[in-house]
Image 1: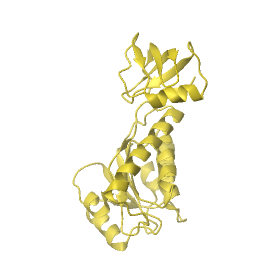
Image 2: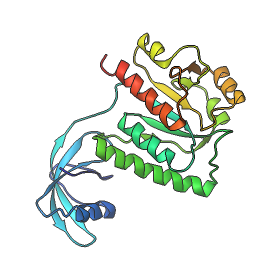
Image 3: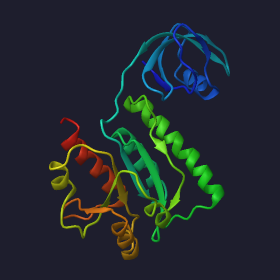
Image 4: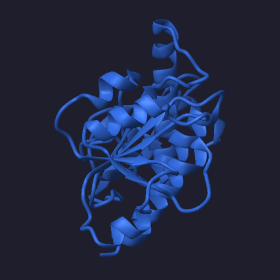
Length: 241
């Protein structure tokens, strides 16, 4: 059954007009009146709806049933990712959503190749939000991962409170897997550097503000690999507890 994000109230027995982009997807898939689709609005659960009208730029559906199904991790993980080059961020966000990340915090660090102007940052944020929606539709999540605005690394790391921050560093003396095996599932922020890694000054600042330095083993992982490997590691150790 085709599955779509629909940011509207999804009340049982109601008739809704689908957003234009969703109506376009219905037409691309060559669905017909009477076909059933799954809709979710990011507020939890999903509904089954039956298409009642399909026109060139318009489609409507009737909400039939509600299923309170969830696919969220029992612990909240924020991926604090320093901006990588080109389309790597799309890949990172897509796979992080599939792995269950709760929030994504893009960071501008000293060694980031990408430098976003205010205008470009707004456009990239909208694009990344679309990546989150598409990944959620595909993987079966009924809640969207929160996407923060791009933040300066030094300003972000100095913010008080919040969950434990884990700095993935090849210089750490303890691995993430070793640490996680002796810890209960808990909220975390995974801090990932850019292609050239975080600078010595940034690592020192992170540690000074309470970050815990852990490694991913004896190999140095690329920025687009490190966060995803860390998420998979935590899921393997914690999710079934």
